[in-house]
Image (cartoon, rainbow, N blue to C red; front, side, top):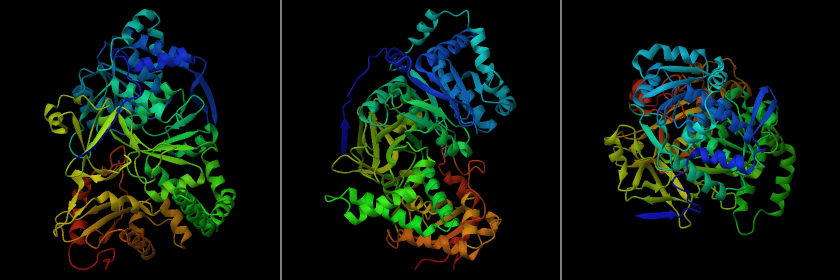
Length: 607
């Protein structure tokens, strides 16, 4: 087995916990602006480290006054907003254990998490969230208190906590150590009921300290970031803690529709996003250029950007001609894309899936270096990340200090280190199944090259074995398909079938723009567009392009377009946008049956 361990740069005292990251930041730079709150569209009010800690302590006092005890679980159900970070740290200062719930969760999902984690209280963002709780509150009898953020929860807690002393909070703050439970984060549940991951203070503390030293060009007190990914997900949650330790100023934007204007007013230095966001930014820019009659210029600019970035990785670098072209397109195209993101963005951290080399090269050449990372809920988010000065586009970087990786004989990635979960909450069977000694079995298939760079090729449980015995990793086909602006989701199928096929949904945001650019009626529904010959032809081109990189046995031989959106609301995606394959296979069984009957269906058979 290949194995690769990186020793930690720093090791923390066993008595430390997450609250020490904030307390130390305040001691170091009390007047550093640590957060910015959007008081009205485009207007941001700064909050210093000391001001933030003062608010954290005031809310923590309210929690203590309300009867929250050390070690008790308290759930947070909200979109990404400043109050989430405030409540998170207030709970830790009070010695409690925060339990995140996605704001999109159905009542049954809320019930499961509250009851399974023994939550004694719940923070909701608004009345609508509270009404969902009301539906199931009898099934979660331990949850005796509900605080409504938009209903004045913070002010209420600050008011009732005035009699609690600073000494009490300091004692509560110190009640946990590195190896104590910090949070229970439930997996997004692509199959079965979500499992609660027991994440320790150690994972957040050690990762924050070591990662900050490794990527100090990105995480430092002179930088800022705008968080818009769900804080219920471990990826954004870790970055939130990391930024407190690293002194990065953080703004929040809960509404995806307002991310673009928020970036222009906030002007972040780096971004955190999933690959789908980068795909959408690129596709939207391309289609807008097409609509404005500048599609040819954009495509040439994109081609030049990718060629230029690839040339940066060669011994000789870009040619003089390529440098001149790149400089020209920087004025015509790239500069405008940077301006749309606020004008100061130099780096982005991408996780949750592979970005792909094409987009990685494109963004680097326009001035935005995307650092791909890899991790899971069970690893407190990242185990690896690309470094600004040590990057291999298309790979998910090098292991972070304090972590180790091993590739099993069957290709599965095994992980160990200071960030691995303690176990699954009240699920010893799942915990035992997830470990091989000290190694956590990730379920991902991957490789490590001679320099230690990691590649992820798919999920072990999602591997397709065709009737002919060919092993196919769906993600390697699906990810490049989603790069096409028309494609919303792509689900590759073919397990125990004679050939590989795909179910494809259209992107409802991009579809009207694409239809207009191609002389078609913009108002076509998804179902109507799924039968439109030009749409079928475009998807066929996308499939053909992907198939060029695969053998005939591995390539997509047939596809059909689903006439509806696949989303979290329809039950086909998790809140972190992962495909629920079992739900898709169940709900589109007839379409799958049709694919494998003789003759072409919606798509043409690829020869």
